[in-house]
Image (tube, rainbow, N blue to C red; front, side, top):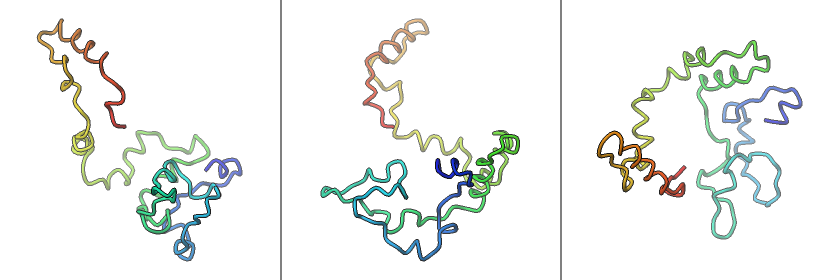
Length: 150
């Protein structure tokens, strides 16, 4: 995307609607050379014990299809002219967000389920309002960042 911005071309989403079918049927190169194409965050992070990249997705990395609403949303967000770019408030009314079946308040508990509540750590149960804060601070001082899974 950086090169597209530097060259002045408009970036686009890469999926089955924007890549020709013959290119999608090609298998990605396993030569080990870094072409810089098809590499995203974490793209090479899953590897077998022999060093080969995992092909758990099976096939081309862009063998996915985004909804037309998502394509339109991204196009709006990538407007080069800030005056033409919609505000965050305007974007919340976009059909992309309206197509979400569950409201965020319903999805949040499911997303937070693997997180250990801060009240479950030893010494963080407050007895009264004054000692509760001191107890919480004490418990947080013993908390390791490694205990959290990001």
